[in-house]
Amino acid sequence: MIDLTQVKLADIIPQNLRNDPNVAAIAAALDQELQAITNAIELLTPYVHIDQLTSEQVDELVWESHVDFYDTSLTIEQKRGLVRESFQWHRRKGTPWAVEQVVSIIFPGAKVAEWYDYGGDPYHFRVETEQAMTEETDLDRLFRIINATKRKSTWLENVTIKRNIEANLYFGGIISEYKRIEIHPVAFKMEDVSSTISMGGVTSILANTTIYPEVR
Figure 1 (cartoon, helix red, strand yellow):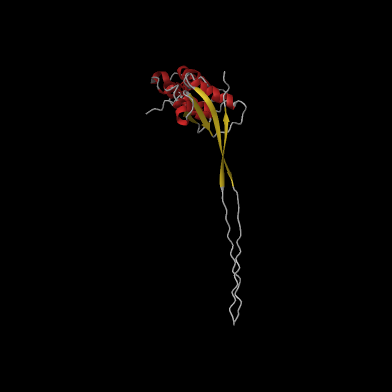
Figure 2 (cartoon, one colour; figure 1 turned 60 degrees about the horizontal axis):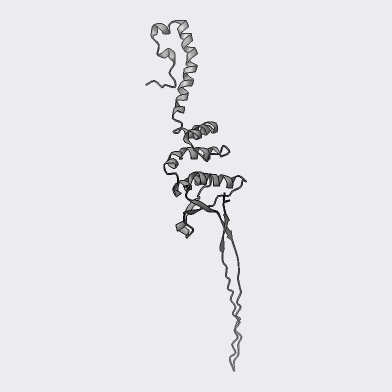
């Protein structure tokens, strides 16, 4: 079997033409152009080879996939994740699942809680994440992602950023016991009796930061 990426034009033309020096020269000149076309065949299935595409090529796929909340400043891994899952999101757009999936691409581990899960007002929901927001644009990006994915009839109540903070608190005490026995008429001395009791503990602190979106 001939490998398409390795085949040369001179290998497939008739023998009588292959012996012609002019035809052989033309075939050799065309090989480079034909090889470039062969290498570009993989680009016809970009979604299959998305992990090999450059950031600029992924930007073009975003336009084709209609990712409304796309941001060119995202990392290449985040861009690929948004494009890869865009078809699923469009099919289920407007559902809590879609909101949670989209937000998790930018803020891993994010969760969506509907109003009836926490006793809130009807048609409201909350977003919880443990991902740190280190850039000034992170919060605005989060709101844009949510507003582009949620149903128009629902409202984001707040965003809770959870942090687990572990702190060790130590406490202890000592109990000393002394016992003396006298026996008459014969007396003897017993050794003192003492003991030490130590106690300790560890506590874990959970800190939540709640951010309320601006009502517009």
